[in-house]
Every structure is written in structure tokens, then in C-alpha cells.
Image (cartoon, rainbow, N blue to C red; front, top):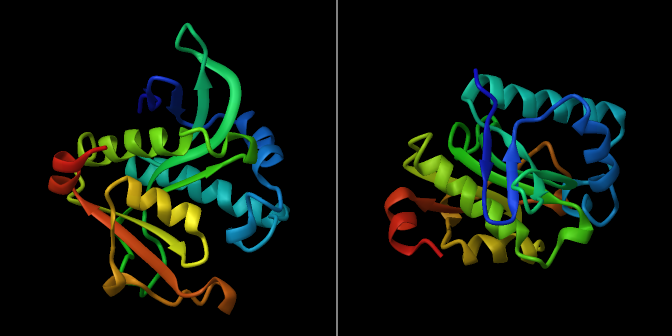
Length: 191
């Protein structure tokens, strides 16, 4: 299968390479970035996360792609920002299990510059276009206003009917709240 690569005005979304992982964890495995993800990831957690991300690409043709800045020539400049992309909901027994899900994680220095929105818009375009999804969900917790704020700016709607309690997380990270957008809504209201 050909490597996935998609470019926006300022960003590159692409498949992972072996040497990306140490730098990714160096930049994103910090107290601020991991605040809503439980805690900084130990080696076992990092290894399991890598297996999941690589498994999504293998099983579905998409994943949470590596996200980096483009240089003026359109190449990845080496400034890794984090990840953004698509996966399938994998919380067994939840109302979103099997649904297309968008997600992002950016290093702290990249916050507030519009990178997450630009990457999420590109990922939604890919999800509805290339991958043909009819609806895409996004998950967070109520206290993570930055995350659901972006979901709202993307035109996603709160879906309380899809909220769920995730036993994989402690009570302070529950319930999981869900936003979603349908393909026709995205085409009509794309920011």
C-alpha cells in the first residue's frame, strides 16, 4: 500500500516512520499535553499506543497521522507538531464502537496557532471524501473545553445520546462526551 501523505497550506499529514516515535513522545508526553489523557505515558503505554496507531493504518487505511509543518518547498520541515487523523471507535460496548472517529494531539508549543483546526479540517475532508464515511465522531471530557471548542468550530454537534462511561478511565475522566458531524453537514457548513 502506498504511503499516505496529505498537505494543507501549512501542514503535512503522513504515515508514521520508525524514527518518528521517539521525537513524538519527547514532544507530547508532557504533563500539559497528557492532562486529559490520564497522565504521562510510561514505556508500556507508549508501546501499546504505537501498536494501536499502526494497527489503524493497517486495518482501515487511515490512522492518527503524523502532523508536521511544511517548509516553503512543501516538504516536512522537521518541525513535528503531533498527530491528527482518523480511527475507528474501539471502546467495546460504547455507542461509538466502530464509528469513524477524529482525534488530535499537538505539542504545547503548537497550541493556539490554528494547526489543530487546519489538520482536523483536512482529516474530515479525507474521512468524508477518500474514505467515504457518512458520520465522524470526536470524543473528549466535559472539562476539556479546548477540545470540544475545536469540535464546535469544526461544525460538529454535541451528541449526548452517544455519551458513555468508559471503564478504562478513572471517574475524573468520565463520562466521555461525544460530538459528531455528518457528511452532508460538513459539505454544507465546512468552515
